[in-house]
Image 1: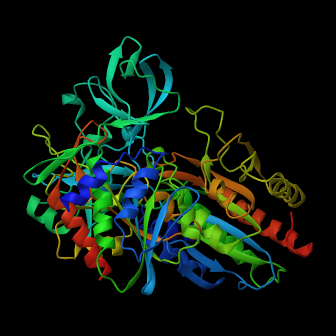
Image 2: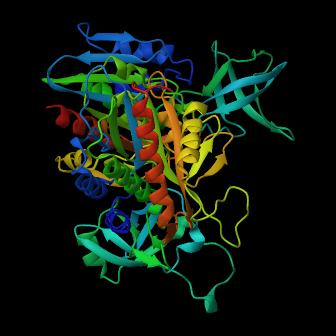
Length: 296
Length: 342
């Protein structure tokens, strides 16, 4: 799992430019996999099987920065989708240029030394993956972990009819549910990140690393189906209930077209949107196993 | 109408957990509808005269859900840390009693700080709002889970000659209007289909009605919801007289020919009405219904309501009666012209 996660984590996946991460995901699929990309860049992998269709959805884009005003080696930018840039954070820019976030009285900028960026180019926190025992951290590690768990489930055996969907632009709330027009399914499982708040001073912990998979009763964009949630809760894997204030990935899909019975699950993640996010490897594994169990 | 309102407003149904309200609404529709069922999201879908092929459909829609609270965390002392489901004014919450839908129905009181020991006169922070069940932490853990919902524990209370107070008049009064309309149309042959929708999750972002409209493919729809009733302390803008008739919305979120038809019929039949000019999103299901599939000719009829989203919302029952009369009259008028067209 670590090698898969590493490969994913080393691939920049800024919202709106998900081509590279999509290629990386495709490279992990078996040769026989049936996949297609729609006009939005959404990757849809279909494993034909029996019974009513199941959609396993995750997003493949990460928070990022877009250059708005380049001036020599200094570029002002707009932060996209919950990105929390801070002074001293290192970034990788479109085209491979590297930079550091600086700050002056007007705000933050990307310092690329003598290199010049162009307006509209993206930048992401420098990709990395470090592990400390059961924990690992790196840029956008929560999102890469969700992708990793879904791919693990995709590579497992199932007799069910399953559509694995890797969507784009979720961080700008522009995830298009149009793929649902061609999918025949009646259950959606949205795999997301959950904001872990198990810092030492926190009195009320809603989600903790190593606590297993969050079963999100409600988030800012979706209320999960209780029967589906209770079904996952009854599985022999570590789960906990979460009522999240974050906006998840599946809300727009749940209500699209005729609507679909849906549940949202999440991998607890510390420091969402910052230079490094931390997750527990056991939670990724647990989420992958939970999905596999559901698909059996 | 009063009995209908009492039955509907006392049914449980916080957004996302509308099964109680759906069951109650389905039961009161039974004498007038066939094919009553729930769709994937839990919307109640019913047909008055069958979904007959080749005929256009008029959709009557109101929402089944009500605002509520959801358990986010259980403290070691057994208090329930809650978050809102729908829009709340936190100033009205402290010391309210709530009905909690856990393993069994439980009662609780929203925690409040007595004025004697309050440090500042400010609205409570929803992030720290707790509910006290009076039970031991062990009992609370055994009976209540994170994600369980609760709603105001209030009764249906008649007020004065023809007013009533209850929680969830928004939008159970809309459901009552639909039922009453169907009662008035009973045994009348219509040349188009009538579909009824009790939509879920309106209070958390208009999340149910669009899917229902997508599935039903109506040619036209009339949504029934509530608007703000006048009170002495409220601004005159955006509030409407109680007992002076339902409110017909005019603006880009509805089709002019639908609102014109409502106004025309109201004048012709001398049913009192008021007009709301809404320049953008009405904040009702009309917003998502209007753009479903290729677009739906949409109208919006609202009932003035005092104290919206509080434990007691006050409605003038005459407004609900007149809304039903107006809807029935419009539908009969449309029936006379033959095929449903605007």
